[in-house]
Amino acid sequence: MNNKFTNLISAIVFATFAPAATQVIAEQARFAPDSEIHLFDLAVMDGIYVLKNGSNISNNNDYDSQPYFMPDSKSLVFASARDGKQTDVYRYTIESKATTQLTKTEHSEFSPKPVGSTGNISFVSEGFNPYQSVWQLNVKSGEQSWLLNSKEPVGYYQLNEATGDVLFWSRYGWSVQYLNIKTNQNRFVSGNAIPSTPQRIPNSNRFSFVHRQTNGQVWIKAFDPKDFSITPIAPLFDSNYDYGWAPNGDIIRFDNNRLSVWPVGNKGYSWEMGQDLSQQLKGKIGRLAISANGKKLALVESR
Image 1 (cartoon, rainbow, N blue to C red):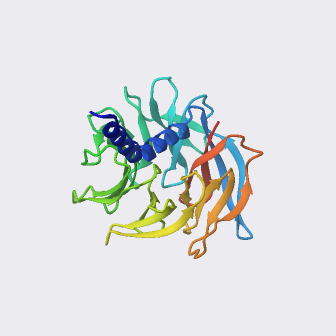
Image 2: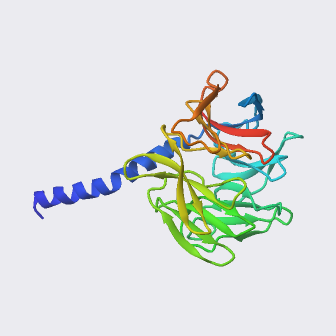
Image 3: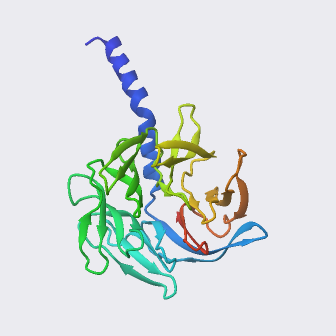
């Protein structure tokens, strides 16, 4: 094989896979081992979001991330590495300040979430079968079962238990896909999807996800399972692709540790900048979760 042909093949391969490789490196950096979960009171004062009474609820010199509140807003679940081997799912009860381990397997579990109002937990498992898929845990019996009838490796996901709709980010496909666990319907939604957890949009059956457009712009977009439409919502201008929905439909995220808000119905092109936590938290703020009653916010600080 001549050098010109070899160089041409190398250039094509690099052009094809370099963007994805760059994102993989960014994703690995995003999951720094030393991360902590902080819980704050969330209030609105004179139309401005205010975080108060912050406390470290993980207190662990390793990976702690992916917090998600239970529907009653009294506790939250999260992924944590505490034995030096893998991550497991834990639950933190707000009133008692007690932490309870929910899974203890030979494999890592990530992205824990409640399964509707059943009291059960769903999560991504990395080892029960050849497919990295979503499982559910019966908290009372301890029994675990396969939740998603899909062989596509799942990185992040969101489930609407009432309708059976699921939107998930494919770990190796860098895409978001839709399926329904009640009808077994499956559909490709979009490529060029950023590794960020899909979210349920309040007061609707729609989901949101983060998409990198062909022009390089990154947007939070809405996906409607009813008609499979995709609608732009808000642009993102920095490398933090994590955000949360307030119950009223506002989007909350952090830009260089400063709280920023995309108000519901915003037709502009800029975020409203709010409280700065740079003095209180020296690490980088990324993931966050907002309780269903809108009174609590949990965030992840990577150190």
